[in-house]
Length: 154
Image (cartoon, rainbow, N blue to C red; front, top):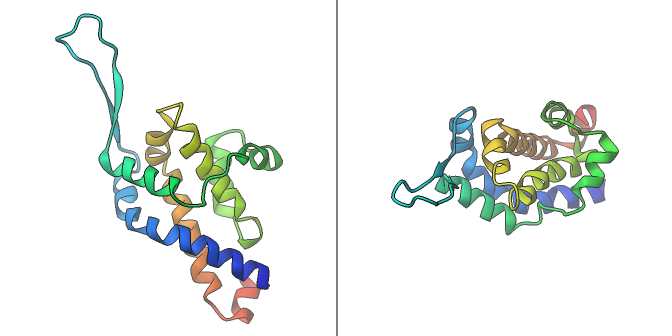
């Protein structure tokens, strides 16, 4: 129990500042948060992605926390995560006992987005970031309950 309490408190320190993005993430679910820029003035120019400023703020904030882990692929392998459907299903089933899955999924999109620019907008549009933060919020509320109430729900 003491280990879980410390674990939740560590996550709370990193995750609570991200809750300010919840209204934005809720609003942008299913909507485009990036576009491609290409200059018509230059004949041989290449297009590049332009991201919503709030998305970039969210990514930078997550990168400054302990919520990303380069070993996320091992969690994906252990839990057999192969698709977005698997991610959504697993996020819904998370408890304090396997909370590392949330950071693994977050890491997949945040770290992966550094080289695959389409991952950040996809995570917003598909609601992945939103679901992760809402699950953390749910776990924090649950953990704030008395031990006898919490024990029945874990």
